[in-house]
Length: 304
Image (tube, rainbow, N blue to C red):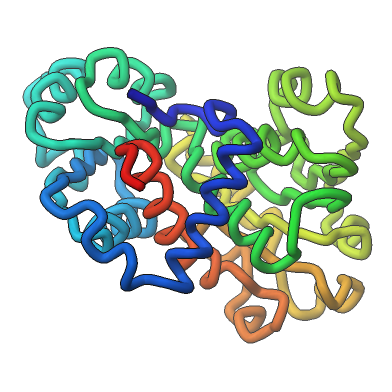
């Protein structure tokens, strides 16, 4: 039985397999409509979500399966004090696979140790979000044709951004990748991420607080939201929340074939006037997430 807790649980070969499977699902959807008939996905979301939860549910439904679960901790027995471990021990008797989001780092790992069925980490605090990373990788593959020799700019909340941490871990495995880390000092990428994934491999990277400086160098611009839910001090959040706002004017020096990604939701870090730019791929990205999650469900359930 396989779980997906961290993007590095998947080899490059397995990621390649998932990408090709997702592409096949897009091209031949009728072949997959009953692949998970009579199978059930449990979505255990202890933290709010729109895209991740609904794309998981849509993925299972389009595979012919059913869905059960909850969308917030308050509507589960967690509100009565039940532990994650006990919740999962019970729910794994009702479902064939579990997708779980939790505000505490490590909660999905604890869940996987108690579960009788595969567990997918759908985001744990500021730690990891492997299925968002699969979505990001699939989008880069579809829009850029591969992963090698790309310069990736990551902008905004690099300290708490679990999507950033997971994407760096995944992209660091490909040849010729460079990173440009764009953030205010208070939201810099944590040292442990650099020490784990960038420095040991000799990957070229630079840190800057200027989006305008970085823009002409980038093949991929990954914008992020400054997350109010990760701050203990509201004053710090208010001071930093508008650090970077992407506008058409700031794109004047960007490459014409650069792509703009965002894990969403956005607040105001990308102006709506950018939405019609041919380089804006964040709504495509959200749609691609459904297909890569369909591929992942099939893999973990060992369905051909």
